Image 1 (cartoon, rainbow, N blue to C red):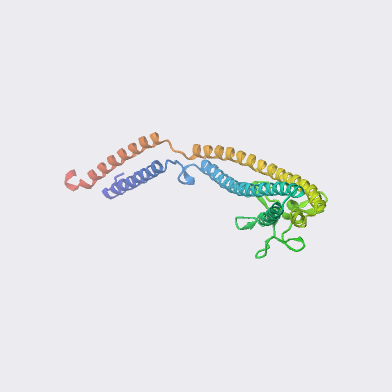
Image 2: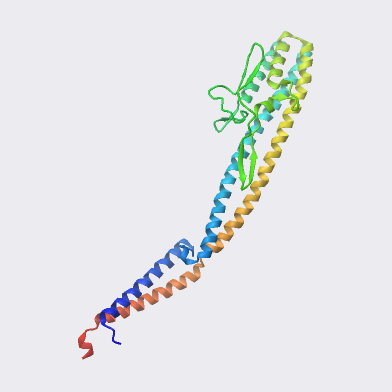
Length: 301
């Protein structure tokens, strides 16, 4: 069977194109350091890599949620710590008021107790990331979360008891908030008073120089401090759980990333050798094609 010059030339061109495609593919692999560029490279490995990437994206979402939860929880604990300090300061002022001896000391105690009332209300209305820390799931904006009647001490809470949750795993959610009712009303089981009310009552008792009322508030403040510490303990457990989940996700992410690297990572040294071989073959093919192009009828006479 005789093969025409045209057919031979076309075959050579096709071979050149195939080798050029191979070289381009190897060059891309070398620059990206990945051996999986398309499903056709290795269908099973490609599918496994896609599953791993999907898993890593999910882990990243969970870790972002956990980081938000930890930040929210740490900010909450910061304000609860400040609230504890205020209660202890109020206790010191109350003890001082009981034993005060001068008008100047009395005036100072009234001023300090007044400031504590204001500071405690600011803590109750604390915000993080544009939301009230202690509002539950409610958004009372533009109203304040907590308001207090300065004449009566009555407190109004404009939030709810909703639980703010974040997804921290495929089948796991974590509660990250403490609502205002649980934080400021106590005792926990059968709330009968409010921390803000007690601090206001202390201010009134000190101003009136009512020793009996001051003694009553002192007793109540002991319970208030214990209650705040118990709320911080609840928060600490939740933060610890999220940190443990974060560590588990970090380990899982590392494992998946390593497996993905095994599937995708190219052997650079091997690719360089293959690329050199393909380039040599292409050069040979180009030379052979050039020889075909130089042939003419006189070469066969």
